[in-house]
Length: 138
Image (cartoon, rainbow, N blue to C red; front, side, top):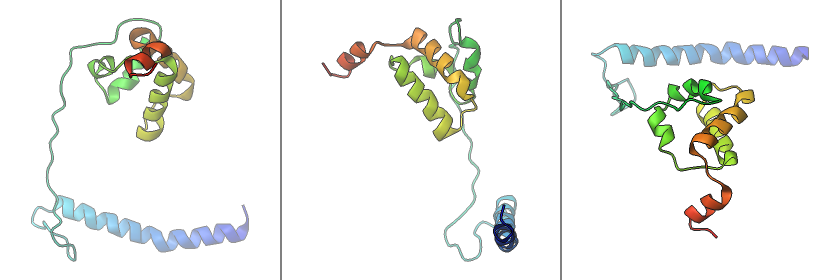
């Protein structure tokens, strides 16, 4: 890397890293200090506790080639939620899986996408003509 570029990068890091750390420290102190509900200079802003109750499901993925990959899906979804999706073509399953990987950070390696799509298509798939008819197409 060019020496000038490294120097500029270092200068930016020295200037902005303390500001980022300080800002994070202020936010953390507000979150951990119950007596300080509103930070200085920000009117109407408060930390609050949130609890989330996720629905339970007794459904499980059916056995088959590729079923061993499904625990990656269970990080965010129940098996029942996935199994209740409308039937998709294999290409649509590939698109859905890639969306989960790129938009939501699903930790599924790229080399397992096709195998998972094949599995999901086998257990909940649709031919393209059936999907078009189902969607009101020809």
